[in-house]
Length: 78
Image (cartoon, rainbow, N blue to C red):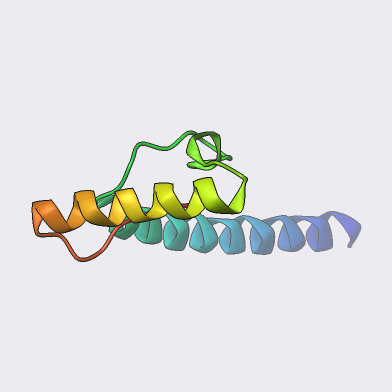
């Protein structure tokens, strides 16, 4: 009886993991189509940002001007 229960629990966990991974792949595919600066795994664009408020605002404003010059209205930053 214990072997059957363990098998059912394992199958349920694999089934849940499959659908979670499938959904994440779909979301990442949609996000990757949006323009934006290159990112690193896990930290995204964190390595590119300034942390002083004035410098951060200037950097964000510069990114907005760059996108406006290209005619783009949306940008991916994470």
